[in-house]
Structure formats: structure tokens, C-alpha cells
Image (cartoon, rainbow, N blue to C red; front, side):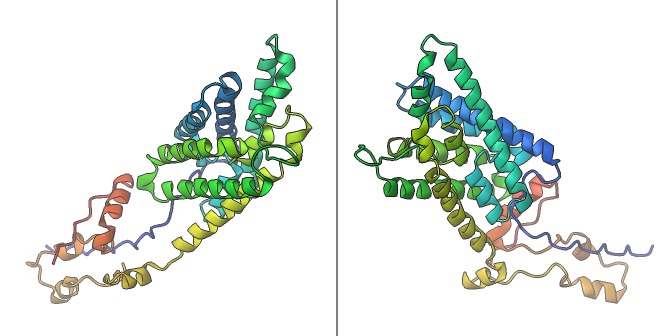
Length: 324
């Protein structure tokens, strides 16, 4: 019986961060961002309106709302619910630039709808005439003139750093497919911690869409300070996105050489021993050197990540490299 011809090895698939939501229509992705943004504003800031005595109610509300929203809608749109995260994702190459404006508009629509619903609910109460002061209590701001509180420079710095950290956590938690299941908990926990820190400083902006929706019924004061809660978070997102983009563009071969590791072999390189089998033409020599060879040799340091990717892609397990 003639020996079976060895199947050509498939080219190695580059390890690139997942681009969540690709393959779905824009209408579905936009709808997911609207729904998640509505949940974030209605749930978290509703706690601040109706239960202001809860010291950690608002931070936990934000964190739990982010976790719930990302679990429910993250697989559709990526679960941004925040223009700063959308900008950082675009800068890091996670989403296309043409999706940025639709995402931001969807986030504004979702949170604006939630603000209107909360305003209607407050108006149904006998004390509904005080709705302006209620919305002022959740609006973002800084001290100006003789007011007591943090100055504009201090709030700008805090909002920039806190939002940059939030975007960095999101990009890191969604950087590989084997991390996606835990990403909502990482992002939600970071949001809760950063909100707790920022509440006494600026009433915890961290999200330009949230800051915008809160000023619709809050009087003229917060409107004049809204610009800071767009510029500072977007600046933080810009820094985080560019840093992540530069880190992911480091050539892997050069990184392996800097770490003292062996260079990664190319998928097109011939397998040692396979050439001799083909040239000998002996039918009694097993052809396992070709048939059982994985798609591409994997360095020992990357074996765990490769196995995780193979699990989610439903590929057979790769053999572990023998230790010296």
C-alpha cells in the first residue's frame, strides 16, 4: 500500500488580542451599548439618588452594574459603556475607528434615557419639585471661587489618572481569549474601587457619557464644568491606549532574544526527520513525524497561553516541550 502523503501544515495563527463584536451587525452592537449604558446609569446613580446614606452603595452599584452589563452584552459589543474605553480600545487596535462615533452616541443615548426615566420617577414623588437638587447631588464638578473642595487642577489630574487606570484594566483583562470570562469581574472591581476613591474628589466622573447625562436636570452650574469631565477622561484613555498599543507592537522574536529564550521556529520550516522519511520512500517507516506534528513549535514560556487558545478554538492539545 502506498504511503499516505503528509498533509501540509497550516500556517501559524498570530496571537493577536480578540476584537470583540466583529461579525455582528452595527445595529446589534449599538443596541447592546445602549442597553448596557442604560443599566449602568439607572442602577448605579439610582442608588445615589434614592439611597444617599449608603457610603459604599454607589461604588458597589457601579461595579456590579459593569459586571452585569459586560456579562450580558460584552460578547456582542465588547461591553464598553464608556466613551473613554471606546477611545482606548480604538487606539489599542481593538475596534475599528469607524465604530467609535456610533459607540459613543449609543452610550450617550442609553444614559440619557436612564436620566429621563429617573427624572420622571422622582417627579411622581410629593417632593418631586426638588429634582434639580437631586440631580445636582450626582453631577460631577470642582470647586471654583470661594467654594470648598478640590480645585480644577486637582480634579483634572485625578480624573485623568483614574480613567487611564480603568481603561488599562479593561485592555489588559480583554487582551486574550482565555481572559474574557474573568474580564467583567476585573473591570467591575476596578470601577468600584476607583469610584470609591473619586467620589469625594469629583463625584466620580470616569465616564463622559455618565457626566453628560447627569447635568440635564441639574441646573446651570454643572453644565459649565462638564468640559473637564470629557477632556480629562479622554486624555487618560489616550495615554492608556497608546501605551498598550506600543507594548503589543514589540516583536516577539526580539522579546524572546532579550529574555534569553530560543527563537520561535517558522511554521513553514521543515520538521526534522520528516524530510528523510519522504526522501527514503520506505513504506515501513512510520510517518508520525509529519502526521502528528503540531501546527507550529511553541516556546515553553507560551505553552499555557497556547493551550488556552486551543481549548477555546476546539483544537487538539499541543504536546508540551520536553525539559532539558
